[in-house]
Length: 94
Image (cartoon, rainbow, N blue to C red; front, side, top):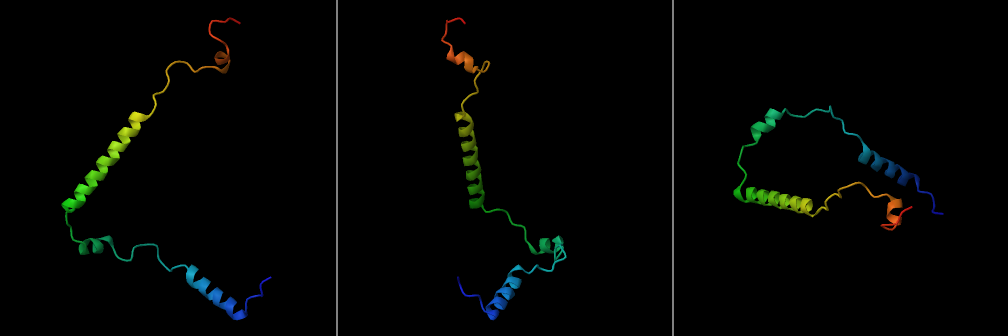
């Protein structure tokens, strides 16, 4: 068995544990109102390169969706086959 940890080491571990897992004192709300953030942020349009990249990604996702929908096997029509019907040979009567 490993020797027991020294008292100093135990206290150090407990102190670090409190530092790591200490809950923050917060009131649950924003620190500043949203209007203050909005006033600091200037409105700017998306650059053309970013807009083109977003459109390209959207088109790629659409093409992948269409490919997935077109390659899905179609559902079978008609009544489901029963296990007893599969074992009997066609044309034989019971």
